[in-house]
Length: 636
Image (cartoon, rainbow, N blue to C red; front, side, top):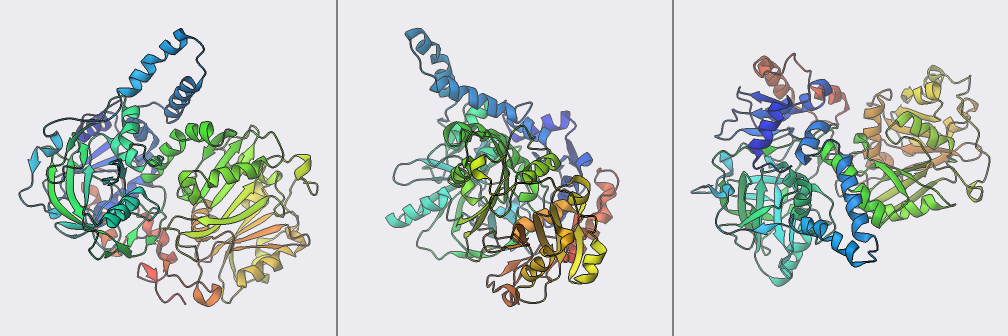
C-alpha cells in the first residue's frame, strides 16, 4: 500500500500496537540512541518510538521498521516473501514466449500496470514545500548524535538525490551526513557508490553538483534508497512497484535540476563545489558494531530547507546487531532473491544473511545441485553479482535443509565438508567499512562448500563426527593458559565439528602456533574448524562471538591448517595489531554508550512509558573496549 505521509504510517503503527509515544524530553544527543538501542535488542518490547519532545518543534520517529511486522507494514505486504513471489511471477509473464496475438494482447494490462507505477514530475509545489525556512538551519532539526565518539551529529536516514550530468539519470542513495555548521554537512558516499561516480563526472566537467536530500514521506522511499539496484535503474520505479502507486515528484526550489517526492517530510537542497577541499568526516558508530574511521568526503552546502506543516523527523541508529537496519537488510534479502535467481544464478534455492554477519560478512545460500563443481560456479557468480562483491564468507548447501534452521544447516554443511578441499579462498573488493582488510576496500574472501559431493569431488571418505571421549575444556585451558574460553556446545551437543576458542595472544604468530598444537592433539580428532576470537569475547555467546569473528577476519590472510592430514582449519578472528600481526591500519573500537548517558537514561526511564527498566546493552561490551577512543591509533 501507499502511505500518503510519514504521519499516516505512524498512525498505522499506533493502531497495530507497534508504536510507543514518548512525551518526556529525551536528548537527541546520545540519549535517544541509548533508549532505542535498549528497545531494539529486547524482542518482546521492540517497538517503534515517537519522541514527541525533542527540544525542537519536530517529533522524531525511530525504529519504525525495526521488526518483521513493521517492515512488512512499510512495504504493504503480509510476508516479506510476498514481494519476491510477485517479482518472480512478473518476470515469468514477461519472459515467456507469446505465440499468438491473443497471448500478446493479454500481456497489455500487465505492461499498463507497470507503466502506471513509473515516477512522474508534477507541476507546482508539493506538501514537502509547505514551509520554507527563511534561513536554512539544521540546528532546528532533532539530528542525532548516536555514539559517544561520533564526530558530531549525523542525519541517519537521508535519501540523497543526485543526477548524472551527462544523461540526467537520477540516483537515490542513503549515506550518512555529518553536520558541521547549520548550513553545511559532509556527504559520506563510498567510492563504489553511484553518487560518487556522479561527483567524479561533475568534477571532469568542472561544474557545481546539485544535490537534494529527502527525509520521511512514505517509508518505502527510505527502503528504496537502500536497495541494491543496478546502476541506472530508478529507485522510484522500485518504490512505485512496491507501493502500487507512482511516486509524484516536484522540482526543488533552489536546485531545480533535482526532483524530490512531493509528500516527503523534509527536503534539504544544496550543492557540492567540486573544486573545494574535502572535509575530514567521522568517526561514526556504524552498522558493523564498530566505529568507522574518519576520512575525506565532499562538503554539502545547503541552499534551502523546506518541510511539511506537520513534519516528523525520521532517524535510525546502527550499531551492534540487532538494530533496525537488520530488517531493511532482511527485506533486501527476500526481495532481491528472485532477480538473482532469474538473471544471474538460476540454481539458487534460497539465501540468508544472518544478522551477526552485518549483511555482507556472512551469506548462506542453498542451491539445486546437478553436477560436480557447481558450488564453485555459484561462488564465482555470487561474488560477481552487484553488491555481493563485498561478501566475505559464503556458505553453500543443497538438498532439503532449511536455511534458517542454523543447527540443522551447520550439521549438514560440516557432514559434507572436507576442510582441506572444500573451502576456497579468494580476494577482491570489500566494503570500505571492513576494518579487517590490510588495504582499504580490498581483502580476502572464503567459500565453504557444504553441498553433497559428487564422486568427482571426493578425495577421501567423509565419516560422521562425534567428539572424542577424552576431550576436556579444563585440561586444554590448563595446558594452554592463553585460552580463556572454549565453546564446545556445537561439537558436544549437536555433533557439529566446530569449536569457538577465545585466546589472549601475546606474540607474533601466536594464534597459528596455538592452532597447530591443538590440531595435533588426539582428543581433537574429527574437529574440522576452530574459530578464534579475542580473550575479552565470551566464546559461549555464539551470536556475539560470531559477530566479532566475522568482523575481524580476513579469510585469505587469517587462515591456517593443522592436523596430521592438514584438514583442521583455523580461522583467526582476533583483533590485528602491528606488533603481533604486522597490521598497520588503525583498528576501530566496539560501540558502547558512555556511563553518563546510561545513568541519565536510567534516571528518566520510568517517565518514558516503556515498562520495566531495560538494562543498557552497552554494559555487556565495556570490558571489550580498546581504551576510550574511537580507534586504537598507535596500533601496538
